[in-house]
Length: 481
Image 1: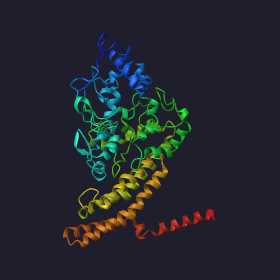
Image 2: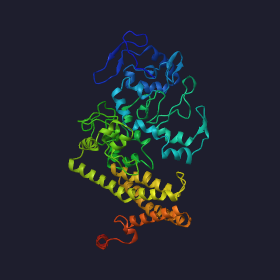
Image 3: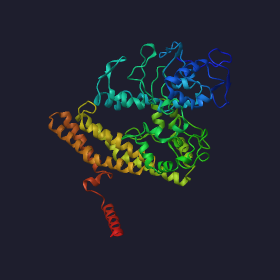
Image 4: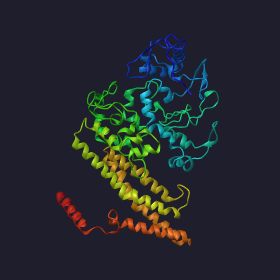
């Protein structure tokens, strides 16, 4: 295991040190160490871009060089001899914690750091089995691994880095800057997922695109939602007023033109410090088929957040919102957001989960071996998430046309007919258990469709509601005729 770097005045390895102010656990060096000086001499020729990026960083101004970050102990799993120095290629959060102890501690408590635990989940079954094969053979994967998982899932969620001889890293697992990368030293996460090497620019970290590497696409389109929102529009129009490279960067003091992802989820306000636990301002976890409170999902991973109620987290986020909006505006927004989640939950998620559970005896047992597996997966994993995430970030088009519209269309035109097909096959099977399961499923469909949420589909809309809607339609026509 890598040990904390010992900075001792007069030591051969490092020159004299000067402690920085008390709010940091890091150190500044009075001059570049002899080890880093040797690295620089070579890399400024062999890797001039890396040298240039480092030269533009705060590390350079503090005389923190290559060796201070890449230093390893001989017993480290990924230690390698590099021109007489013992180093490791990967700089893990544990290494960064030598100086950035608070930030790493917060990060390690977050869901970001645990993203690599997706291995073996339903999503990974898709990438490793359904989409992939074992055709990608490497020294550490002699039986092969799916290139779809390596180039897709692992690059955002993080790989489990495997070490070959002499500290070299298996090509299936490296290069990788997935935010939940499982490192050879046992730590989880990758600081460089956000703080790109080797400049570690705060201006870049604060850009929405920095988060958009992973938070985009059909199942979690946060960057697309942000770009559609008034927040994103204001940011693009006023990017020159954002003061993105400010060391302090407090909303309402250093900038006020627009918020970015970092503003809302991580950065300082007049009342809150910077946090690297992005869950501390989120009051719903919209990842599962049904939204859950964040402390519930934190408890499943035994994260410290299990003891932080959602009301506290919502207050933290509202503290950000109130820099630009009044309390009434903020309260009403959250009522709208919660209302959309309740609609999705009660109209589609709850009955969908119940119907799928009853359909299981009528289905092939293998995951994604049935047409309805795909339909239901996209209903909650893609369309359901889009609707919920869109509402959480004020993206109306994604909430509606890419969210609730798609959910409703596929619930009625695909999901229900596929359930009815399973019932028909079950009844025709001659298998007593399947016939019994088909009857239970049919009864549940009848119950769902006769509920207030779905009875319109059976042309059983309440007469008063039907009359009111007809009146509204006539009023609409009258405005334009």
